[in-house]
Image (cartoon, rainbow, N blue to C red):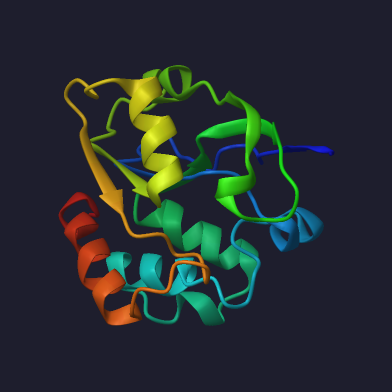
Length: 164
């Protein structure tokens, strides 16, 4: 089984909200970009949170720029792990990312949103209570998580108050 690694964080010095996934899936790794699977709903959900419903239609670099403009950062809780396929349930022998190190570099950070149960479980274990940060568990944007989009969107909209 091959070891798979996350991408570098996408953050600005003024990031107020950090969205953390688990580990990029196969299509994202092949494309070298976050949430590249066409059925993953991340870009629709994040677009709703930042008030940019057009986010999925933008090219990748424009999507990242729109997140940064809204003071939203993006990263994963897992630095690298063994995993066959893309499912979080298959993650083995993971090494966590240095969440504390990144958070220390983000003085405006107010909240962390965990995209899915695996991200929440690993991220909360790493961060503990979160200190002054608000930690929000979100339904996964993955197509493997079959909750209706409207329900996911409603839960993700709790992040809206952290976006300027």
